[in-house]
Image (cartoon, rainbow, N blue to C red; front, side, top):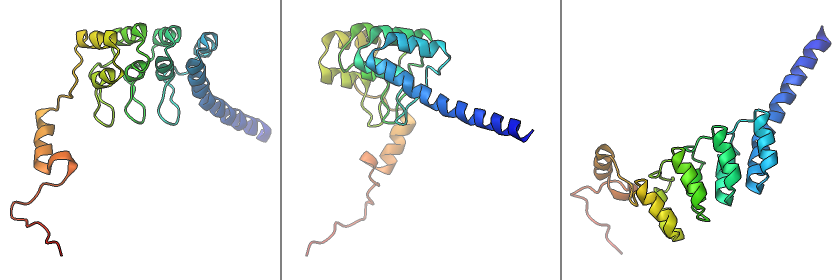
Length: 180
């Protein structure tokens, strides 16, 4: 009986270890443009939204590298276009790098937020304008993308109360420091 229990525990531990590698395998296959490998991993039931340590998904890798076939395969398997990595970047933001119109259209059609912000409050449109891909900019405008982030009234009021730029508000009776 003890051997059977040990075997089951070992089997469970190994299955969890291999599952952790699967998200990395899917990310690598998507990044390298290996459509057959990507589809094989997805067919095995690998989590299409599995993340790397930096929060990156296979959809982000494929979007960044301009792999249209892989992006479409991942979307067909239910990849979430709204996931952001640890820096706040989304697959749509990654797709802007090389300006692939098919990928941008596919992501928008799948529901990507054209007004998403990264952790530095840079919008999708602001990133697009830095790349100067005119077709992409027009697609984003048509989809309703804004260059500046719209801050809700409550957040704007809180920011004004706390002081601009994350600095504490100055006290009206505070005197400037005297230089010696």
